[in-house]
Amino acid sequence: MVKPEVYLAGVSEDDCVKDLQEKIVRLFDAADIAQCIDKNDLVAVKIHFGEKGNEGHIDAGLARTVSDRVKALEAKPFFTDTNTLYSGQRSNTYDHLMLAARHGFSLENLGVPVIIADGLKGRNQVDVKIEGGKHFDVVRIAGDFMVADAMLVLTHVTGHVAAGYAGAIKNVGMGCAARAGKLAQHSDILPEVLEEKCTGCGTCAKWCPAHAIVVKDEKAHIDHSLCIGCGECLAVCPAGAIKHTWGNRSAMLNERIAEHAWGAIKDKMDKCAYLNFVIDFTAECDCMGKKQDPILPDIGILASRDIVALEHATIDIINERSGRDIFHELTPHLDYMSQLIHAQSLGLGVLDYDLVTL
Image (cartoon, rainbow, N blue to C red):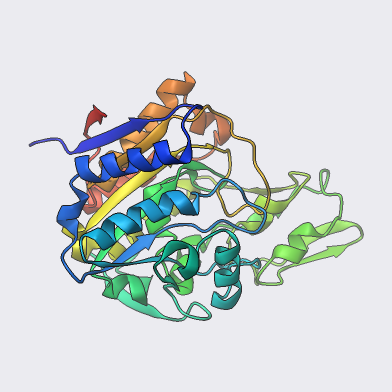
């Protein structure tokens, strides 16, 4: 069996935006992404627009390089994402689009539409039957992803507070899921308050979308009968006073993410391609509404038609350049590789790869 090729364009601190744009074009051509796209295709360009206050998300000017390339093929690209479970600036389409525009993702700036794929309040969904799942027979995917003719996935690679690693599979599995799909992935993953650390500041209660947290006697209390397991409280607590008791639940979450990714792409495997940006690598993902300092020097941009091979190559390169398993170091209690292993078993791609450096 021929190993899928993963292409790497390295970057340096001397690269300007134009240099990066030229490297994206070279990757687009080397990975033969044009073969995914036919004339007049409606092409979903899946991207994370960044939460309010986040500065690490992919720059809109770099993203436009991809959509311009698609337009040159006489296809019809649009940038897209889904609404979030948690309370923030991306929980409904109105606020989400306003924030995206502030971050440079607008028709005026990109020359193509920006569409929220699961509708105004996250209810535009399609039930997709999958085979081989350990957790689901049916996954709920945002409707517009299912009717798009092709999909290009642009991912800012980071660590992740619940999955351990946030790359293309998470971008698709969580990011293409409708609200019901996100809930299904997070179910059974419930947080606990460490009272000795809790300062009673109320940040967790403010951000909880289920109103499951109250502050009483200067301590936060979580009502698990209301909790939806989204993990937002864990992410926003400034005192580090909220933890998950994971046990084997880390692998379960990652497998659920993989199963939703499979549902999103299984019917158009030959119409999808992926670019991973290992630039401004941060410990936590772009859902964090704050500026994060990079914890590694910039490495580059990777591209492939095989999502699993791309992810494995990305992880290997990051760990090689850092001289350690940085994802395990960041979240030693999380089993991040379970996401890739399960994705391979489902048929999303293969772990083996040949790395081609441009």
